[in-house]
Length: 355
Image: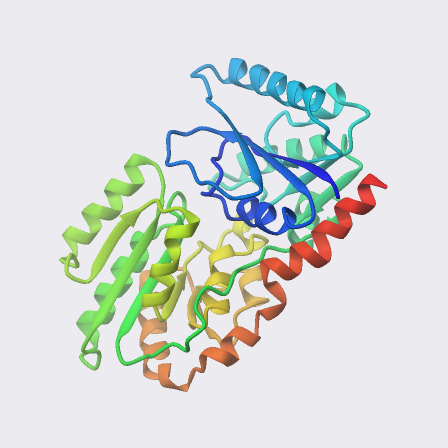
């Protein structure tokens, strides 16, 4: 049995998928603690997991300094065998402050942005900081290649099968879940409007959008829904906890995995794409490199990142929707279940690091 501390800066427990499922499956055989931000959201409780909240200050550097102090205090006042650190800027200082502790750096994403120079600079900093850690986890080999990190272990993203019954396709219920910033989700709204104007063969259509982003992006999406007169078809729900997502997976039968096809997204696997598929629904997905490793003719359709491509792809997908089988779709990604990844990969890896 290990005493594990999961450290995440900038997010709150219960709203980021990885930390939630790490805790859920690691707690069976281990003592798990999570140190995270208190962002003022509803606090999610999990039996067997102790969550320690930290309220950030307006001053970034004061927040960082006191966050380190909290980590050190926890290490001194608790028995901690190993720390699993979700990458954040300046995390390398923890390696210097705690030279004799077993630390694992968990890299889930590279820099996300639209400016090439900023992305390159941020990724270079990430790579430099990673050199301070002996144990490094990265979710895809393509991301490791992009970051030019050679010595690492690959821990892929996962998903959970929430829905046991097969999907019914008599009505069309689209679902987008995920972040809204820098995703150009408004293009799916424009594509949906084009689809509606060009087709009359769909009697019932609904599109649920679940996610969070900056105030400007949220307002832009809401305004676009009104502008395109889609208020009776498109429903924006905002941020939801991981536990609240089940009702959306239950109702939906087509997943929307719309990611701009630009360099910084090519090596980013879409977490919710796996969620859609493992719950038995086909997807309409943009054809980034990592998306092409998952989506095929058995479980969805790949498109370009334009509103026209979304409309055409939706037409093709819906016309062939009854050819899809939920159980067959689930089988295409069954190896990506969180339970399998954590119990058979992450837990043995952490045990090996502590030995």
